[in-house]
Amino acid sequence: MVNKKEIIVKNDHEQTATFGAFLIEKIIKQNQNPTTNIAFSGGNTPQLMFEKLSKLTNLNWAKVNIFLVDERYISLDNKNSNFNMIKKHLLNNIDIPSENIKNINYLNDINEAVKEYKNKLIEQFSLTPKNPYPVFDLIHLGIGGDGHTASIFDHQKINKNKLIDITTGKKYKRITFTYKILNHAKNILFLATGKEKKDIIKKVLQKDKRYPAANVETKGNIYFLLDKESASLIKNNKYNNNR
Ligand code: 6PG
Image 1 (cartoon, rainbow, N blue to C red):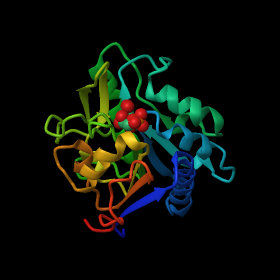
Image 2 (cartoon, helix red, strand yellow):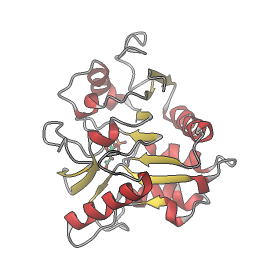
Image 3 (tube, helix red, strand yellow):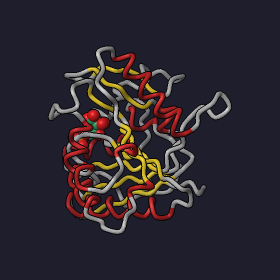
Image 4 (cartoon, rainbow, N blue to C red):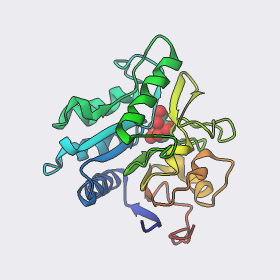
């Protein structure tokens, strides 16, 4: 696995979404294994990328499993559910077997929901004490204006010994992958656009560890897919390719 950090800056949000869709397609097609395991995040930024991804016609989704990086602990038909958003912009528009979709269910007891989701990981990745963490082919992450990623809002308050943890967002309780999963991915795709992200992007690329997104460090490849506005404080890509 060649580990690299690449900062890709496109002219605008639309071009960023197009590039992201093609990058995801490339990672799926280059995968030599029988199945590709991907985890997507929620939020507003990836919606156009998901729509463009759903229009790429020569992808065999039957060989792709889609997990969620995190979820707001609300009913799946709530418009604020990440699953609802990903279904609307991607899953409803592609030919993917339902058993390949690994969402987080909204159960009466949040701990039961965590346990059920963890079992999906154990089953898909054949996790054992000797093979304790899932290695995703691709994990897509957003970056909040406060530097959160997934639903990790404070990197010191996320359980470093668990695969999945419960956190508290502004409005909802969250279920989220921890760094134990994020930091073992073969490919991480950070997607962040717009001028309101320019300050946090600079801090994350400067590895300011106060911000959760800056604590994502996989041995695989990390892509920062930005537009000119979110990259406007980065000087001549000097953060590229170093670790
Ligand atoms: C969520 C997401 C979260 C998101 C960032 C960026 O549940 O909200 O998983 O991590 O990726 O908040 O969101 P935007 O793309 O809307 O800025």
